[in-house]
Image 1: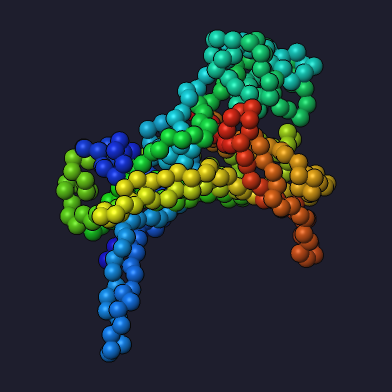
Image 2 (image 1 turned 60 degrees about the vertical axis):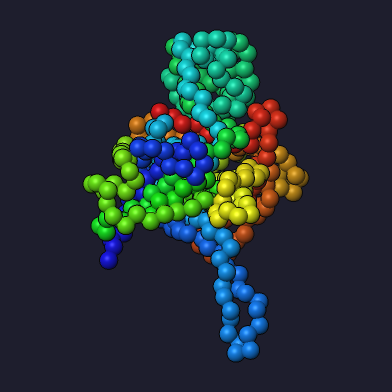
Length: 384
């Protein structure tokens, strides 16, 4: 018998699809469960037997797939969660950049600053930046010159000087094809199933009021093998080492310093973000299992619920108006993530009333598409 509390899930990035690196440095992923499993395809023979028996079930395919649910927290560059977020975005990360001695006049949303020390070359329109000082907070950059940046804000910025402007490390969705080896170990039994050629297909993220921020990665995988004996101390891949994730606070509903739609903050109760890479296994005659994975369209959808105050969202839906959504998830140590969708259209919006003694909520579903100015559909930044 096996105990769920003795589960360990770890992973390593592959350099060759479907091949576990030699002496892999496995990174342990903090999960809330797992459903990784083999996926075998059969076809029943159509031979007609005069005794009515089925002749045979013929195996035609073998692959693997499954889900890894988690609670979102900050993850350093080399750790498992960050590797999978990178695999979701299909892109490399651009390092953090800062600018010191910034100033504001009190009559605009403009900050005079040089981020990166080269005429603001290290900050782009669409980036989320953090300002220190009397305007401390997170802002989206809407314009820039070689000496200034303009940010999205509900009111003009207060006059201040000595401001530090930080642009967190960022990724925008791309075409990098990362694959992973994922080990699902049952430490109490001394056994593990090892999945190779794992590619992140979807990420589903939920931020709800009075709740922990949760997510689920869904994978397509090429193959799996079973390791029925311990090769060392809780070691199931030859010469593997295992590194636990660094402890960081779990992000929750109080970790949201900013959430904005169409340029304005709004009183949200819940927001979801769903990324789908539309991954499909490529198979070949004479070979069992996926030989590679095809990335399809990068589709981003989601929903949010907010207190109903006016017809803004419903009018945008009816008028086919393009908007934008971004939100920040920051822990008590000022670490976390921002997610920005610069071009969004609502696919449904309504303010149903379902009974007495309830708040009226506006419920919206949305889809994000390519923003020509920012040249991306999604921008994810990691605040360290």
